Amino acid sequence: MNKFFILFGLVPSLVFAQSTDPLLSKLNFGEYPPGYTFIEAYDLSRPPLREQAKGEGRIVPIYFWYPGSEPTSSTMTFRSYLDDIAHSLGENVERESVSGKAREIFADYHFDIPDSIIQAYTNLEIKTLACRDIPLHDGKFPVVVFNHGNVDRWWVWGEFLASHGIAVVGTPNAGTFRKRHEMGLSGLETQIRDAQFAVSIVTKNKNIDGEFVIAAGSSYGSLAATGFATRDKRVKGVISLDGIIADVNEGELITQTPYFDYQRFTTPILHVNSGFSWSSNYTLMDRLIYADQYRIDMRTLRHSDYHFEGMADLYGCNFRGGELVDNSAGFKSLTAYALAFIKGITGEPEQLKLLSSRLEEAEKAVFVEGGASYSASELLSMIRVKGFNEVVKIYQSKKEAHPQPFSPETFYEVGLTLHRYRMIEEEIIWFEFYKESFPKSADAYYRLARLKALTGNQELGRKMLNETKQMIPNDPHISEDRKTYLLSRVDYFLNR
Image 1 (tube, rainbow, N blue to C red):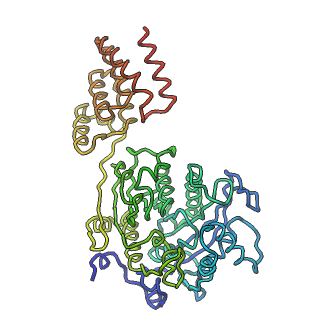
Image 2: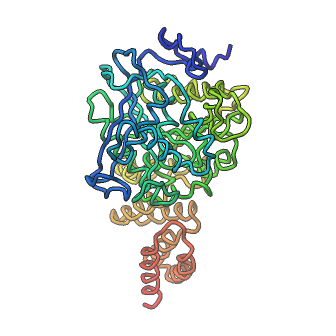
Image 3: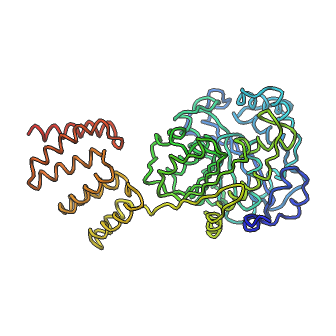
């Protein structure tokens, strides 16, 4: 028997073990009966969608699964999940029109799918395990928020994780001003804001622990999950399901968001990929040097197999067309990896140790340990308490492991503070380190040029100012405003 699943699989409760469903019966559900509720919330800080019936603000439909206390005999169905899509714009839909409206919205979003497949998919007869609106179990539960997709994608994840004592939030894709989501920077920011807002709503409940949030996303949604983590320290982990966050070309949008900084990103990541170039080459993730990363290749899974669309094959409906495939074993592995990661992040660190040590026959798991990150304030505190040489030792040690041991902002802030302390010799050494780590940094060259001039070497200072002037237009680390300022300062000192 696979040792990995002996370690990570929990014994399913009796009620779940009795399920004969072709997917649910194969997953290792936990001890809690999963509850589910649909929340219609309004973000008053943003305008309503163009198609939205009500005008209280932007509607953010929230699909919320949670550990329940007492199950009922009336469980959810796949069709009842789909019916909740009908209310995603705040419209008052007559009861007899709900299914038709849900299918209309679903078909509009999946405009590239043949109508016959949409008909078969939306007519699937599946009895699920969640009970609508049952009481939440007493306790303090972490929350996972899923990005990119609708309730039909995430219901299996919601029910599975809720049974293990984890609250789950999902919000549908929607654009900034209209219901169709845009795949650009504004669309990404909107998806991040929707996730933040949804988490803020559910964490008002005293049983939901807002200090332990996991941001998850598939495909494009991995960018929203990562973006959420860059701006909210309550996000303790990121799950990327075949996400484009691995590749710097496909994932470049995340680098344009206002809070992204390679050097400051320290949130652990679980990234599982199916072998596409944009999910398996790690060019962007390799730059996230301070984040622990759990990278797992699952080449047997298709892109749609990371959520329910691929698993619909088990019910005789191939959502994407082609041959029916049974990838439920791979999906079971996926849920085990994700559960271990979430449990490890939110209070059971031994789960992370086991996850990082596994090498599977079918899936290759690699753990990449992030380095210790230091802020400018931490380094300056060390200088005050232990002296400048202590920071030099840290720099030299980290430099052996990575060519850019600190961010440009950290280098610059420490250097300027040394200047205010009148530690000029130490400042020169520090900016030499900055130049060594970022050879194209105009800021580093400018400061060194001024320091050389201040310490009596006017000729070398002027030479370096001329070099700085050539570097400024191509410096990738500074804004256009900063470039304009530096050019004015260089010209001022050259013309004195």
